[in-house]
Image (tube, rainbow, N blue to C red; front, side, top):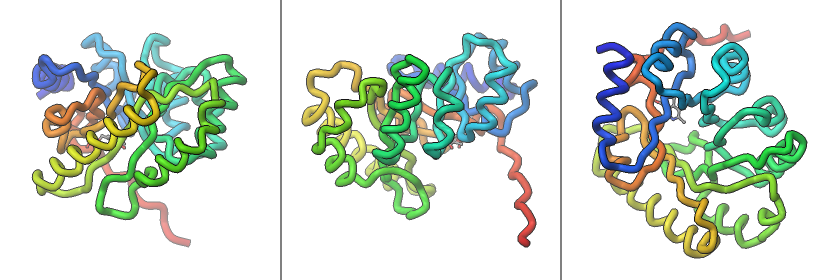
Length: 230
Ligand SMILES: *Cc1c(COP(=O)(O)O)cnc(C)c1O
């Protein structure tokens, strides 16, 4: 199927769910991205700052850019002028830097806190207790160029659907708890970024508002050759 057909298929599956599709364009060529834009879809996700900036510079200005990958504090300044949502906030240090760069560019930057839910140790994100600890300290409330819109998570890399379901269910419950405890009066805290190609159908059933889909649209990504070891 073509890129346009794949997008149409996923939008049909989203159906009545109030979920936004983020087309994950990392590693994809400008030609492939032009095929996405030709369908009228203008919401893209990238996981590397440099690649995102390079694409932003040459593509139309009405694209909504989502940063979904691990973000280093010293690189926030490059995306602060244009990024629409940073999904991958995983430390208070990063949140403070986002505030600083938001202030410098006079933009309130929308963010999600990334929660570590997978069994693998290698995935980034806060542990539940780390988020609670940070929110309890209340220093974050002074970061007025940051708008925390919700939470993001990546499931374990497994084909066991039962496990993914239970991870998503637990994540959803955690989201509800955080909302009630810290964002009860803040209607903007309403986003759950959950679901990729392998698990977005389960994510839709668990209240995801943002699914991040790459390979189900473009086909399998080419794996970049590893840098030779010195
Ligand atoms: C690459 C990536 C995706 C998309 O993955 P696919 O399996 O290709 O859909 C989603 N979320 C994050 C954080 C990613 O890095």
